[in-house]
Length: 167
Length: 172
Image (tube, rainbow over all chains, first blue to last red; front, side):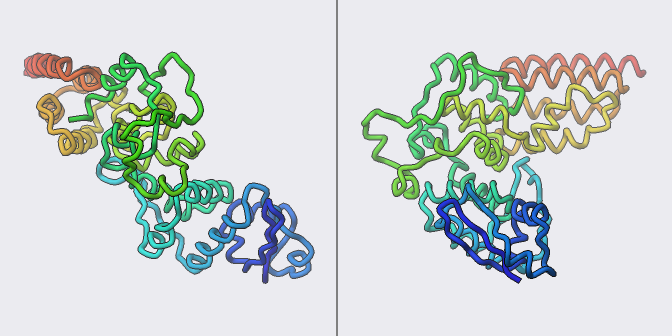
């Protein structure tokens, strides 16, 4: 059975029921609209509006879901030895996200968050965290073009509070 | 880290892009940000707070000092396991979490190798021999010491030494 998803720019995507169910948000909406896998009529007569997702982003989300639709539920390792939340990004996912410029990555992350697709959200979060990892504050500021609006006194105060974990 | 930051007086402002046209601006490290013109500051606060737990303690610290908004996002973001242990250090009554503290200090040692931390770690290990009340008192001191400056920590570690000696005398 197929489910119809309608994006903010009125584009209709017809996706497999299993793919639709990968989104917690879509699952909830389907339940609310009494749409079930065994009731073709309910699926044909309804469509799920997704006002926070554009056509371009939805296409990427569906591409990711297509690849992962048969995955076993993953047990997330919440914290590694050093206390970080960790998520292993598979080679396919790395390749999938590799060519997205940062703006697109942010849009995709927003969509994954709105649609509640945990695996995709974790992939993107880990990818962005990896971009920050190991860089000093001035390198992070330079990389992301961040203008520091903290006074020297405030910086000193923050440094003092976090000094215990720094070199 | 985490909620222990407190807050600075000014409110967080919305995304700030540098307007200065210096040579640093031209040396972007990651091509993704160059291509789109979008950067980390374009990520909404709620999503930023979900990314931050994927960073280690030092990365979080470095991010926090880049601007007020990220400082506040870091303070509000979910704590890592180590930070949570850290926060609980002062309230554990029976010293049952000594092994967890040991792991915590080993992690800190890995990242910083600081003498005062190593010294504090030795104190923690010696707590196994003390009474719960003494353990709690010592843990309280460690908590205060290791959220303070390097010198304050060193000083506290020395006080801990005294405290431990006292507790050993009491038990004898």
